[in-house]
Each structure stands twice: as structure tokens, then as C-alpha cells.
Image (tube, rainbow, N blue to C red):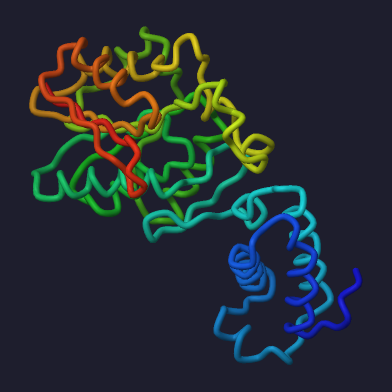
Length: 288
């Protein structure tokens, strides 16, 4: 390391220079605040008010290795092992996707439309870190929520996140695309999912920090059948969605019309596409 001293101001100056070729200044400041908090226990206010203060050699070393990982495009959430989602903290690692703002919009819609309803049953298909299921249980406490996923490692992460957020949720390991497994599931008032939906032909639009570190199985689908999971969800709903229930899915922004048509063809009478904060087709809402 070539940091001139262990003073906060010198550390920040040095690592800003190191990261300048990879990130913009605002991102770098955000990263460094997170790293100081994670490894030195210092808040943003403490950092700004005590620029002359020093941190220990071991704390500096942890920050140093974290910056090296950032220079290799590793997501900050995987470096510190956690991510904030809808005001809650979730542990994350490369076995699960990093929660995104668009998914917060999906969760917010489900909460808004179901907060005043009596006790309901909710299933989160492809739960990953559990961020959707756990947040829904947090803000819809009277509702029963369960989550399923194909990945045992993801489910271990989800169970840990449910415990740390004090939410009681049933998680089950299951290959949702295997129709024979559906008999093991109940009927539900709400089906929610953020399934894989990025076509492999769209990989060129994605950043290296996603391509190199996030689980491809949770992101990508074949171009020949990009609506694979949506077709399965629509078919599952035929026998497992209560007649007054609703399906909510995050979708590929480029396939809104196609996804909507799929659900209409499956017998849904009302299918709406909701745009995200950037004006892109992002959420499908379907009812019989």
C-alpha cells in the first residue's frame, strides 16, 4: 500500500485516485463511506467531521483489499456481504442476485394493493435472497408468505435473512419448472416473482460487475424461449391462484407486449403492464 498515513483524509484521497478510472466520483464516495462503516465502524458524519482521525492498520488493510476487489469490478454488496432493500438489510453473496430498485417497485405495488385485505397467502417464486418474501411479510404481517427456489445455497441465504429480519417464512427447495412439483404447493391469493428474464442476446448491454459475479442462472434465459418462466407461472396459476387473486411479476422491459399476450392467452381477463421509475415496462399484474 502507498497510503501516506492512516488518517481518514489521506486514505480517502488515495483510494479516490485508485478508483477514478473505474467509477465516477459520486460512486467512489458512496463506496468509501460504506467501507469505512463496515471495517472501521465509522458513519459518514464521523468521517466528514474527523478527517484528521486515524484508523488501525488492520482496518486499513481490509479497506485496501476491498478497493482492490472494486477495481476488479466486484459489486460492493458482495464485498461487504450485504445490501439494503426497501429499508431492510439483506445478506448477499454470489449465490443470489443483488436486490435492485426495480424490484422495490414490484414489492411496493404488492404492499399497496394488499395492505387493507384480510389474511392472504402469498408465494414468491424464485425467492433468491428472500428480499421479496421477507419484505412482504414485514409490511403485510397478517399474511402468510412462502418462498421457493431451485438453489439450496440461495435458500440458506434466504433463511438467514428471514431470521435476521425477524420474519417467519416457510422456504422450500423446488424446481418450479418441473410441473410434478406443483402438487406439493397450495393455492394462493398472491403469486409474485422476479424470474430470470434477460435474453442471452442482451448480455452485451450489461456491466462486467453483473456478468462476472452475479448468478447467471437467476438472470438469463435462452433467446428461443425468453418467456419460459412466465409461461410456467401462468399455467401454475390456473390451479393454484384463488379466483380473486393476483399475479405480480417483474418483466423484461423489451417484452411487455409479449408477456401480456401470454397471460391473456392463458385465460386471464385483466392484464396490466406497469412502468418503472425510468418509464420502462417492468411489472406485470394479472387477474382472472
